[in-house]
Image (cartoon, rainbow over all chains, first blue to last red; front, side):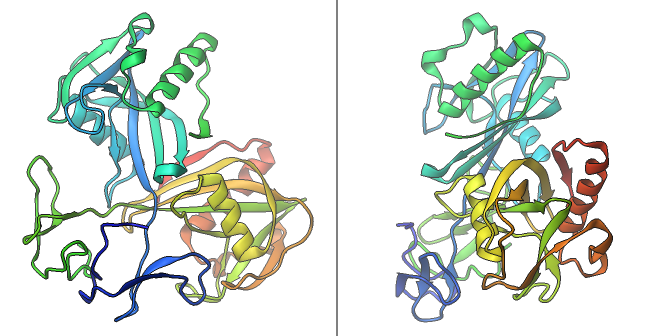
Length: 179
Length: 179
């Protein structure tokens, strides 16, 4: 379970136990003092495969994990926003780019780390972009120049492969898969 | 913010403040004693529009909220599962039904409550189903018999409307929308 939970956030007790609550069928972190159940759920990573003409926009990460490697703009969806807002916000934060979304493109479950990636295709409104605070640099890449050996995440690799294959066929179906 | 966070789950201090951490741009719950940041993120509700021939399967809720009203089998995605596993698990838990998934069908952001619905179409493998512990009863409905005034959630109403419209056209595209 989550090693960062040492105290009950509701009552402050340190008597947390892993048990299956009544009416449930999964072990949860339960406070033995006040009975609060501390559920943990997957996080959504929203992002964008940003295109400009025949190129795609990648960001070189200025933060851990995978500092210095290339990624698509993407990050954790926040409370009180839509998935489209999340994808566009992350794109602006990491690449200072305004995009128009062209459709949902990648939906990847990553059960091992309890993340769900939700990625859109989107195109730059203008050829304007630059590094946000979480990026060292932001660059347009043609297919021949993609830094395949310096990509930050498997989800990025998978999405770029899908994109260049789909572009040849002129169809961009949703890719739903478990990584 | 979340009123259920009274104590830092990492160090147990009650000195939590709402502030924008360095390098961030959103207010977070931060522990003034140990510096832990308590992020909060949207939850995924995974579920299934279950069909059998020309009927759809609905469950009458045995739990709050919306006790006694009709819903599709759906619930919070758990850590360490894929979205398909989550949809099938919820369908089995609430309707004791085994389904084969026919495609991603509804993707709804609900920013007001920070939920993201991810709904599949799926068909019963056999005409076998029944109430799980969270359901009072489980029933197949023809279009003419849908209890439109007794549906538990707007996402259910929206999905059923899409389904009966799409069925007339013989196409079931993904519906991506904000509710």
